[in-house]
Image (cartoon, rainbow, N blue to C red):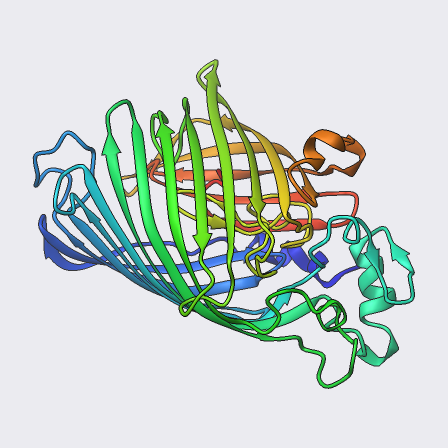
Amino acid sequence: MIKEKIFLIAVFEFIASFQSIYGGSDDFNITGLPLASYSTDEGLRYGGRVYLYTGNSGSRSSQYAYPYNSRTYLQATASTKGRLDAELDYDNCGFLHERLRLQCKLFYERILNENYFGTDAGSADSLMAPDGTSYSTYSGYEELFLDADSGTFANYNLYEHNTAEGSARITAMLPFNLRVMTGIRAGSIDIDTKDNGVPDSTLMSREQPAGIQGGLITSLLFSVSRDTRDYEPDPKNGSALDISALISPDGALSDYGYSAFSASYRKYVSFKSRFTLAMRAACTYSTEGAPFFRKGEFLTMSEVIPGLGGYKTLRGYRQNRFVDDCMTLANAELRVRLDSFTIAGSTFQPVYLAFVDGGRAYSGPADMITDPDLNGCHTSWGMGGAVAWNRSTVIHGWVAMSKEDLGISINFNYIF
């Protein structure tokens, strides 16, 4: 079986998470947070984050429930599967006006083993070797193809990239729980196909997708949302509708000209006090000209989620397993809350999780209407648990399965 079957070790690698206040007051403090997580795609990820806060929720008069005046954090992590990243993030609540929020980010990552299964939904439906042999499970694909022939094709579905990126977003808080965001996202990426000089030894070197040369990319961002969730980190009731767009004009500051549009809806319903049903539906579309590394991203006001597969979308498949111009996604998760308990002044509430995910990739939006065949839908399911620490910090752990593979995640936050 695949190496990840040693996941039992990872299950006991529970996230080491604590905070240490090194000094400060109500208007200024610094907080340190060690980070650790595990997922099938990244392996064990570890690092740290340092926060700098100014102000607190009680130091300003505003109708908005801002937790601070400003927050800055510096983070650095690495993983056992070849990921290295550093991030500097700034969040200013009440920027120029109490209705405005400014968020800026500088980000660098180097990933030695990023997944690439192609950018055509039809060709990616099965795991296929260059000789046309098809495999129904990832474990068989890995054993009989990737690890065979003295490792000639060990990197067949991998590539390496170095990405440096910056973004700035301004969000306006409007009446009726509406928010409008505009921003800019700019950066550069270098791509290595990992073929080690052997022609066609990787899928990327065979397909030569748009964007293989890397380069500069600058995009304008736009989002509108309506959020009625009762508590964003751990909602029990309410909903969130998000419509986002990205425009990348081809020119001096960008080597790629394309647009992307995404919509998502999340709904939370609680019943019998202990049960919450969380549901999400999303779709995304990228126009012609999108580079493969941006193709199929799910855009939201607060984050960018990669294509179908991985711990944020289809949890029983590998990251970016299914990517095409147009993609749809649906998730349903039942959260069963147990009795809370207190340790050293902190409150912890265990939560049982059971979930099902579904998604499909299409070559264009019209296919969603002309070719709605559910046989092309990919599904995964699983169960696990979470702990809500003082309700604001959620740590999850789960195992997800699909007909092709198995996924594991121990990390912060619910996926939606």
